[in-house]
Image 1 (cartoon, rainbow, N blue to C red):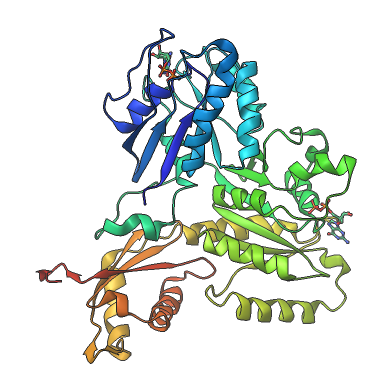
Image 2 (spheres, rainbow, N blue to C red):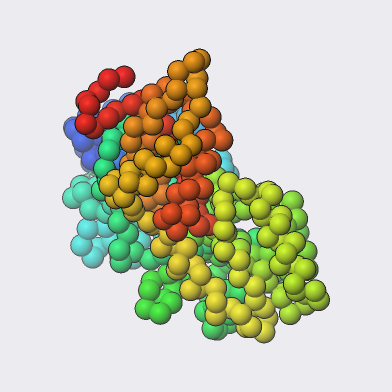
Amino acid sequence: MSFRVAIVGRPNVGKSTLFNRLAGRKMAIVDDTPGVTRDRREAEAHLGDLDFTVIDTAGLEEAAPKALETRMRRQTEKAVEEADVALFLVDARAGVTPLDRHFAAWLRATGKPVILVANKCEGRAGQDGLAEAFALGLGDPVPVSAEHGEGLADLFDAVRQHAPAPEARDEDATDADEGDESEDGKPLQLAIIGRPNVGKSTLINRLLGEDRMLTGPEAGITRDAIAIDWRWKDKPIRLIDTAGMRRKANVVEKIEYMSVGETLRAVRFADVVVLVLDGEMMLEKQDLALARMVVEEGRALVIGVNKWDAVKDKKQAVQKLSDRLESSLAQIRGIPIVVFSAATGQGVDRLMPTVMKTAGVWNTRISTGALNRWLTPVVEDHPPPLNKGRRIKIRYMTQVKARPPTFAIFASQPSAMPESYLRYLINGLRQRFGLEGVPIRMIMKAQKNPYAGNED
Ligand code: GDP
Ligand code: GDP
């Protein structure tokens, strides 16, 4: 089933214009005269390498002002219900209106992933409206100009965070690089996650070297997490602080539970995730669940063990941690672990170098030639098993994308390839190409030998 994206927002913000832009043809009628009748429309859309169904919710203009809200709600409710993610458009030129705010509150309550889009941002006239949009509590707005086709790369990035896993999308991926995003110059998205009270805020303050959390971005500005733009050794970093949101609530009452939803969203936006553990209470069930979530989302994981100052038997603690990681997260070997004390600052300086290194591994690209030179002897040494009396034959392999490293293996009887054999290949790949500590994905494809043409 196709990934579905609904475009929602009050009249005249540019929903239809964006719809046309994404669908790549003039389908919806665009008119700024209120009263033009329009229906809800759907079209197949493309953005970057993503294919999805886009749903337009325009068509509310005829409603009498009083009925507008109800109608809008009904229309939108349906579209949003059917969608995987909602693009919530505001008009940056007009600024945020009470109707926008109302809409935002309602959208937040639905619990659907929402991407806030500030339209009409070409030129300067949209600056104020863009700033106002931050206050809607739906995360950072993506500035675009639907009319001029500006900002679509950033919109793609945002939509991609919600798209299905690459395995599902890359169905037709063929050999060689697909030239997917090379993120040079873009900030590294770094999420700091962990159970309450493990010391995330203390760590972030320490990293930023100032008491920014107390004075800084107002808690509650974004729904799930607070993003802080920062530089580490001249590299732009966007820190996503999942503790920020709770802080506001803490004033009223201490919330001791962890919201999985908010953390998941932060993880999806991240390149690298630092999972902070409390050195005295390590790898509780929740810690492991978070680690697994990061791995399943294909992000690069670094484990930060905090409160190291309070740990008595440090040697035993490290041993226990690596044993548990080995047994509970066997699919990833060599997850980097950094121990520190955020409160005293000791060891914190080792965290960012590890993060940058892991980000590099996560971005690795290996040439098809190098992969196959490695693959041939590995398969000869230990061939795949027989299936119904016929040997599964591996022909060739290629990297289809990075972030995380994802490989396609072309073989006869691809669906019969056992997991254990894939694990054997993945472990070999890790060793040979230094892919320690990041998720690796393998996609089995019907045999397609570039030298023999299509046979299967
Ligand atoms: P809808 O009612 O939300 O579907 O909005 P429309 O797509 O019909 O657009 C409303 C008006 O805004 C039209 O006059 C569009 O030409 C205009 N519009 C749409 N996108 C942009 C944009 O990026 N910049 C500017 N300046 N105008 C836009
Ligand atoms: P968060 O909920 O994950 O953001 O955790 P906080 O940063 O609010 O810290 C929770 C508690 O742990 C606070 O009382 C901190 O003082 C304490 N804490 C944070 N870092 C350290 C540390 O390195 N050592 C010790 N002993 N306590 C720490």
